[in-house]
Image 1 (cartoon, rainbow, N blue to C red):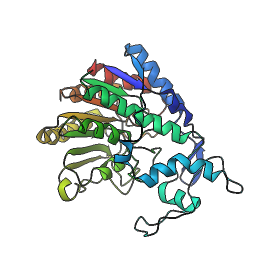
Image 2 (tube, rainbow, N blue to C red):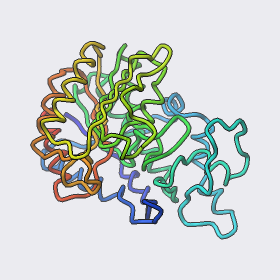
Image 3 (cartoon, rainbow, N blue to C red):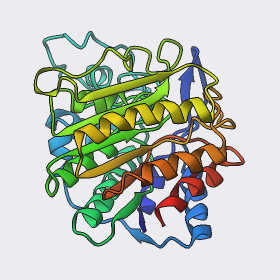
Length: 339
């Protein structure tokens, strides 16, 4: 097994995000990457520097307007009088609005879909490096250089839409990995085990049947992203039936989670994927700061063992999972199964 990382990811260093109307200290920090690197070192998994493949696959996942916005928004924002150090939207339009705004304040509201993804001076370079890390891991697997690869990605990506950021996410790393795998494999399944629903990933592949999207997550009736992630959401047009959501009640522990995973994997098996992307969040942990689900370190070991049994070329893309005493242990519990 090989892991991939880019030190440029640490250039994205948010200072705050909005929770319940208050600005609180950011949770998606460079320190997360340091914890994951320490865990990889303890497992003696080699970590290679991510490559820069350019914008090609990014432009298949994200719209040109959005990529251009992310690259240039910070410098444009700083030209405003009394500009803030980090950018959050002043207002957000209905997504059915017909007019794309020309001014930077309007475009901030258009593309930043909530207040949990402030843009700072290093956000574009950090998010770009994170997406290239996902593509590097997928390329490594697709070329047959290793059957399994881990992409240490931060900021995470699964809440990012084709044209919008949200939930700490800017570029959809798991979607980027899946698109690279699709160049080699006919069918790819994305299995998202983050605490939160992978709404951006769902939306990107909503109309497609070549990429199946599966998400196990806390019930969005009482958890971010609130508006998406319900079991009746199944895809549309050619993609109808190729999206599966498994919302779980607060407090769900290992056994119930593993039962839900087994149900989900029955449908994945019926899809018969040629390759797998695991959107690996670790924030369902019993000690995660979000404290919604209750997965133990042993539970993560069992989850990893079950996913390993799929026995497919697999790219593990890091999503959420925030600083706690057992964060690195939880990563190791999953990855040991793929060594």
